[in-house]
Length: 560
Image 1 (cartoon, helix red, strand yellow):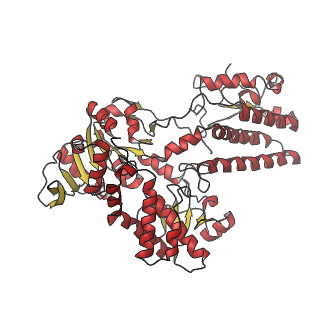
Image 2: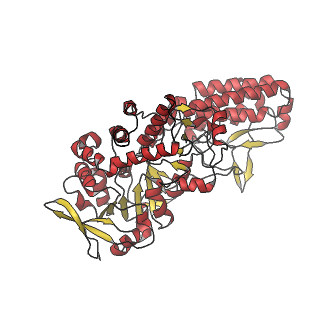
Image 3: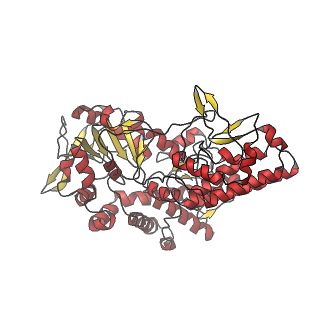
């Protein structure tokens, strides 16, 4: 008989019970209440020690997560997708980390030189390890924080400037840990007066600059209005884009920020698969042209059926029709726009503004045939997916870093050990004597410490982009609401054929017993069976016959 989980034999022999005609193997082991009641506490301690040694020294999954994988949220059949649309920044254009440094430094200079903030702020450096994408900023209080999918502030992630508040201080300032839905809904749009979510990679320099400015004012005992500081920092970062600083920098140093010809394999494959491509971006044409020539070649425009710049997303996806304008060129240089009525969209021409409805009508495309790739949850993915019915793919570059960590032995062993502790605690709670209660308290402290370590390996201040202590982050909950698939790079599409069907993992509810879980496969089962046979208490316990069975679910991918 195979061991399906860590507790299949370690705690007690496992019974199987037919469910809907199927014999179900327990995902986490089973144990009888009667058996627990008549066993001594040392047995539970021995189980703890044996299991801890096994997890630390011998546990190893049979597979690792692939960085280049495409992860499905909804079932997606690529044979039904004929039209591929792409955003530009951080989708087709995968900038180097130097981009964040440049944005931060330039915005800091604007803030101090144009808006007269103290010049010493320009001496503060950009720290790429300070924050992660998807955080929220309390505009009125000047607090940065992480919020989970149930709108609960994670009190161990509340910062004022670069100083982390303890839980009591954070709760005192916030007054509540729950954020109302209407506030959360408004936080994703620029112009919110209470809470602002910082969702794209361009937000990282803004978050770091906000923290440094608040820290500077606080350390110098300078009184300031948090709302005004937020508005001026936000304006300074925006001007890096709108006033041409970023365009001039990328144009002058394109090889510093983008890899040459990096898109050729992807575009070649999609053309061979007979897919139609379009480019839809908010960026201005001169910036797009410089980058695309570098990444795809001089004749990059020939790869796309339609090219739309300055699209004004997410308003582009409104159902109201909005006419396109044609960019006009003289001597291959962008000169002005045409105000003529556009009755057809021609390949090789460059268009601006417009709307998704006009795009579908003029090209004769069906919404159900379209998949759009973007990195920004709200501007790129939400409206086309929920309102227009486009399939969507989120490009989340942080996946590479997080998957590297998840594949490390220290990480996956800690995850297994946290879940093992939770099952041991659950069983030890059967006993109500003082010694058992103390044991449970000790294990709860150990669990808390291990979970803190798991958080810190991603980012010591805010943890994983995708998770909080108990569940998914607000960022990941929105991601899974509006993306059909997600991946770390558009180049990962090269691995899959044109008729690939992506199947999401089967989700499970707490009352469900048949679930699909990570690390549950033949290699893992066999390794556990061999290892657990060496445990001294196994033989003795195999002779016992449980009378009441409690079955636990085990999901190694949850609760980090």
